[in-house]
Image (cartoon, rainbow, N blue to C red; front, side):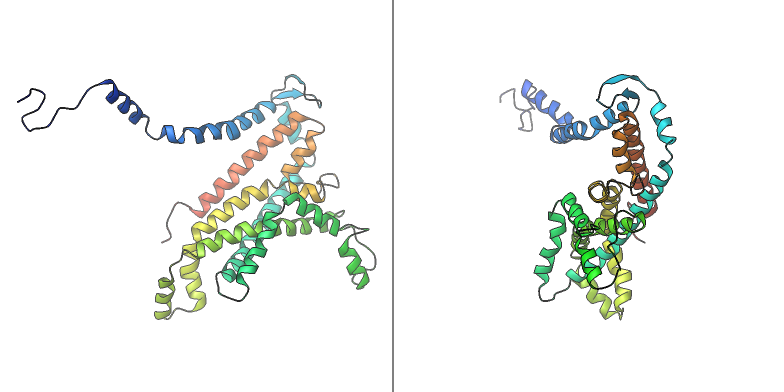
Length: 311
């Protein structure tokens, strides 16, 4: 019998260069597969964040030339801004209000679209329209509609005698904020509704049949079965809306540009307003804005206990 064969009839494993290569690749684990994605994240996300933080410590002219190191001067200058407190407060109210309204209305729409009724497919397609259109284009369209001199709303309301004279809806913060929130909810509904609808359609029908057999009412079934099983989709909708609404720029900039002054500005719009006078201070506002988003989302996930199952 050949010496290359063991007593059990099996050949010993080869210890050549090809085996070494295979073991070397094996030691890399999933890195060859996730490497491109990690590289993309570094280039698209981490590098801009690094540049944003670095810029906030520099003296930069309006034309874009670096004039030296500024240290913490830009942050001190930012926190001395008289409008910063009101802008941060407005941003919190804006974010909470828009996200809350979006989630409540989307929950009702998702429940409606989960039922069978004539024209359901058409209404589902119609809901995609605000999502398919450009957010900035939608904001500008509403701005034209609300225009004081040529706006459709003022024309109709004046003809019907609802108002005595045309009203500057976007020139007054007390009326501009509700309209901007309306537009923000309008453009947020499609994604949120379809997210919740997808969650509803994953609920097995047998669960509802068992609840009916046990004598559970409609509200009891919805509260005890539908909402707990919808929790993952609901959390996804809330988190994504928190980030999108907090950083919302096209709606506000397209309708009021944050004016008059900064009376209708959020921190994102305020950051852009600062850019025209001091790029370093604008970068400092960007860093603060980024930190606020991270803290806000982390706090929500902590409070919602997103990684814990319902009892």
